[in-house]
Image (cartoon, rainbow, N blue to C red; front, side):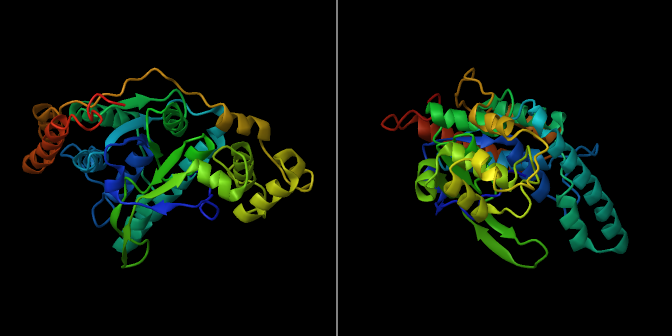
Amino acid sequence: MGVDLKDLIPRTTISMNALAGKVIAIDAYNALYQFLSIIRQPDGTPLKDRYGRITSHLSGLLYRTVNFLELGIKPVYVFDGKPPELKEMEVLRRKKLKEEAVKKYEEALNKGDVKLARMYAQQTAHLTDEMSGEAKKLLDLLGVPWVQAPSEGEAQAAYMTIKGDAYAAASQDYDSLLFGAKRLVRNLTISGRRKLPRKDEYIEIHPELIELDKVLQELQVSREQLVEIAILIGTDYNPDGVKGVGPKTALKLIKTHGSLKKALKTLPEAEFPLDPDEIKKIFLEPQVTGNYKLEWRKPDLDGIIRLLCHERDFSEDRVKNAVNRALRAFEQQRRQPTLEMFFGAR
């Protein structure tokens, strides 16, 4: 879910071309969930192979990553590790919501309401450890690096921007900013023409660039205060936040009183199932690692064909066309020594 800061955050619409030559640390779980949700049959059924194994995540990962490489973007996917114990409530809440969505999906199918069924089906997406492993294997074959975070993937991606190994983190959630990401790119993995929920209308979605320094300057708060604003609204570690407090009210409270502790004294009915200071610590002192190497290599066409076509029933012609595009991008970038080295560079 992430924290809802959209009403406060200044952002700039950019083109994909604006990210050419830049390393982008992508929240892998966020991206894979999007692929699992969006890439479905008309009745909401995900793509599957002959054995009934879901392949939507692999389809999205292949074609979107090839698009990045063609544009000169240097993607690195960051995978979640063990979530903080404080996130247990949110994990259970999400599980319950998915179970409810499954029931509503089945009811809609039984009624013959395909559109409603598809809407609920998108809410049932579930990413397994096996799917994550398959995604990592495909990335290895594509020659695209991935990083295993010790805990939250967004924290790790943010750390990579702070360290200077990545230009920006990419996620739909704003949590990356709370973890200190210097820049956040939204809509990177879903840019393009997209259907509006419950409507027969389509819109064009463009990437958005958010810069942490500009956010703090415009709101006139520190990063610690931004985290405190988020806690008042509700984070993955305290989903309910403070009743009746939205983004603008939270901003006003923190700017007026200077800190969460002082603001809470004016909200005697505010209840927190967890210590707010412990939640702050997760964002301000997250578990991250510097044990990674970023290297972009030549895609393995034969290996990808074996994995996707021979094992998972993908169209060989389509996969070959996609991988050949990635191979051309690799060769083109390798022939441009005047630019910062594309493959093997940070």
